[in-house]
Image: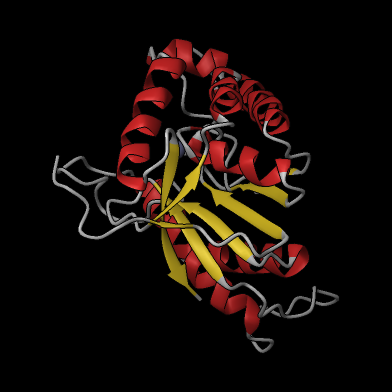
Amino acid sequence: MTPPQKEMEPVPDDWERALAIVAHPDDMEYGAAGAVAHWTARGKRVTYLLVTRGETGIDALDPHECARVREAEERASAAIVGVDTVEFLDHADGLIEYGLPLRADLALAIRRHRPEVIVTLNHRETWGGGRLNMADHRHVGLAALDAARDAANRWLFRPPDGPDAWSGTRFALIAGSPDASHFVDVSDDLERAIASLEAHARYLEHVGTDARELLTSIAEQVGKSSGVRYATSFELVSL
Ligand SMILES: [Zn+2]
């Protein structure tokens, strides 16, 4: 493993509202949910916006049944880390297109929720180390960053009776980025992070992941480069 280029800095915590925008049920739960647990325990409000219901993610389940299972798993998972609002946009799982319809949906959601912080998943082509990222993640991550800017421009995306423009988003936090720059100390939040991933029981059975082992080893590794016991990392992009 190559050492970090520079010291990791703590994610600023002088904000009240965050909106997490990701493609699939479980995308928040591979690390970012630990930070969400940390924030909600300190009175911050975090809302989840899922672009799909993950309906093509389990080979043994047909998409209709799979959507039902994974939506329920995501709601349970969110509740464990203090998130009570989970919205779904119903783009097609596995086939999410980057484009104006997605940017419009995300910009209008940002205007409705008025977040100071946007959390999303890695939009880059790889996770680092030559491990290929997935099209859905690339498209949603990039569209979330672009939509933060779109939301601030009142001349873009103007449905009748739509929400007012919102220019108060200060920065985006990108989970799973190969260019991580910031960390959240999750030393007191790891158990809830693990429980939030374990809530995806049907999905984990399909992929064969041990949630505790995986999240603990990642949090330990990030903790080492952040000077704390357990941490989760983000790339911070100023908006
Ligand atoms: Zn995903």
